[in-house]
Image 1 (cartoon, rainbow, N blue to C red):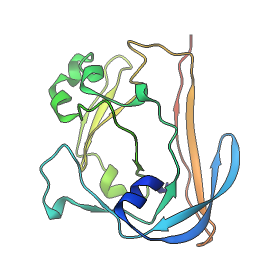
Image 2 (tube, rainbow, N blue to C red):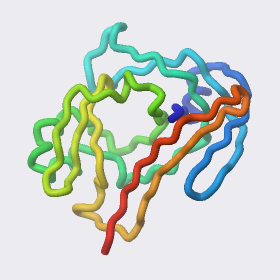
Image 3 (cartoon, rainbow, N blue to C red):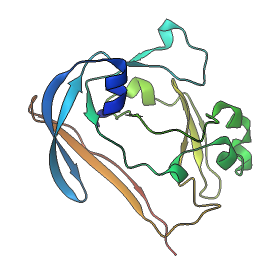
Image 4 (cartoon, one colour):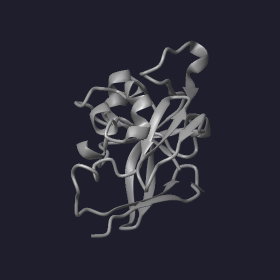
Length: 178
């Protein structure tokens, strides 16, 4: 339930923070690592016209060297247009396919994740949620045209050693049975 920012983003912004240690618990176990705790970051949707009122204050965020995200997991207009019921939002999805994930917004930033509009999935397909930051596509994006044997299961709990407060648990399970 925490927000993470890629180290290179923080360096590019020239932002300073407090050195800390975070313990990350996953299904694979528990791991402690050094991080920088950052206060005062703001975010706005890049595919929308924004005003200063549209910026969202992020809660304390922690740096991470990289995020384990694969290209086929990122929604693009080309991938989403295969679902007829999502064609109406294709123009609202970033067309750039050469991107990397630099920010993971945790459940502790409700304002950024709160649904404003939902397009339900059909027959077990993707669904879409419009948030204050834009449209999010939820579901296994790569399965329709590029089946995989990989099973992904995400369940993470973060413990900021400096604050002695444990985050609540949140998890998402995606599986595919062959």
